[in-house]
Image 1 (cartoon, rainbow, N blue to C red):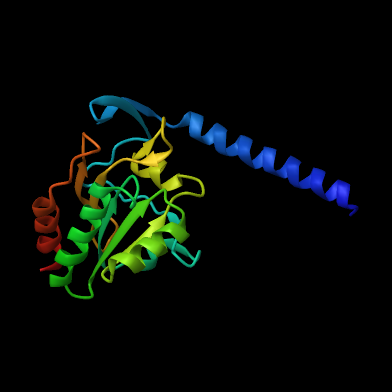
Image 2: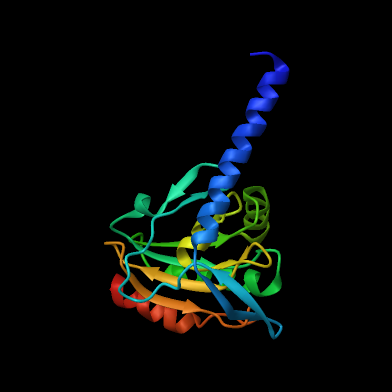
Length: 199
C-alpha cells in the first residue's frame, strides 16, 4: 500500500473507531451533580454500582503497559481504590493509606488504585512513594473502567474518587462514591468490609 493510502486508511480507521466509542459513550447514563469539586457540581458517566452487583470486568494498563483484567485475580478479594490523579495531595494520601493498611492482609487480598493518569506517570509516582502493596492501573486509554463503574467525570475526563470491595466470585461487597472530590474516603469502613471477607 502506498504511503498516502496507508495514512488515509489509518485516519479512516481512527474515525470509525472513535465514532463507535462516542456512540457507546452517548448511550451511557449520566448522573448530573453526582459529585462536586470544591462545591461545584459535576456529571458522572455510567450507572452507580451497588452492593450485590456483579463487578464489571475491565481491561486497564499496568505501569509496563500490559493489560490487567479483574478476571486475572478471580478467587481473591479485591479492593479497588479510584482516584482523580496521583499527582494531587488527597489522592497521594489515599493511595499511601491503603498501601500501609493493606499490609495487614495476606496474599489473598489485592489492592488496585485506578486513575486516568498515564501509566508512565503512575510508575514514576510509585517509585518515588515506595508503594509495594498497591498496584496502580491506568484508565487513560478509553475510560472504559470509569463508564462501567460510574466514576468517569464527564467535564474533566478524570475518575471520581470511589472505593469498591469485590469478593473472590466477582460480587461487589462494598461501595463508596465520595461526594466531594477533595475529601478522603472512609478507610475504616472499606477495610472492615475487606476484613470480613478476608477473615
